[in-house]
Image 1: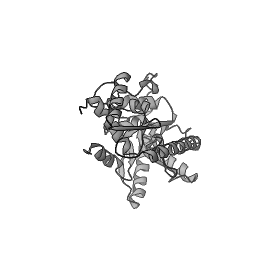
Image 2: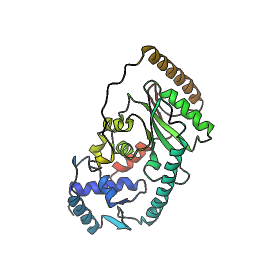
Image 3: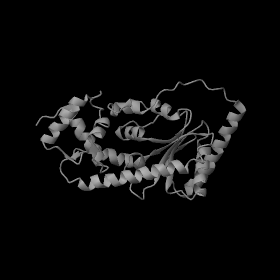
Image 4: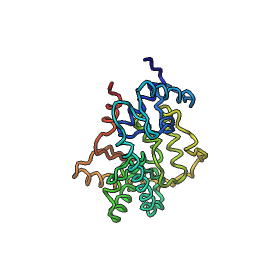
Length: 286
């Protein structure tokens, strides 16, 4: 049996999603086809031909409109996926309502949902992970305000603001299939000054992994205008308060041995290294 590079791309895409117990529809398989080795978009006719070939040769299976690798019964996971999609939609609606109070803060430019909720794969009791973009020199100010807001609403634990970055630090450092998924699956809750579009532009490399993903799903109709020059005194004051709150929060966090990456313009809490575990499974020969 001879497999071409497109055949292998379909198989590795299904293998990757199987790590998450998440069978795909045909359109999802096409749009999230892993194309880093193809290095180009794939015509739908060629994709469908390759897909039918893999089904006829028994390398992939299809049931109720969902596709998954051969070698197991995915009936349970199809049922699970449908339930989790419902939970994820409910959680997304919930977080939209919850964050209306904090969305008016002038330092917060964007909040998006990441993780299992963004992927439509959240169990009922799963928390909601947030990605937050802040004005320059205000990352730790925003973290303090968001933490206080959620604490007062008794929502800490259910809602996890895991990542804070400044508008000057939008480029994702790690570039791989896992982070590319995270970039494209990110679900905006609110978006000021076209910050989401700027984030996508800074991480356009994600389309190297998913060249079939419809670019029109992400609006890019904005122009970067030169902003007004900031007052040096107020800018220095903001930076001072940001660094002060950073030091105070880091002192508090050290008591609980919190893991993550922390800089004046970047916060990333890491409960465990899911990325390494997932990539190791994806790259394993089996």
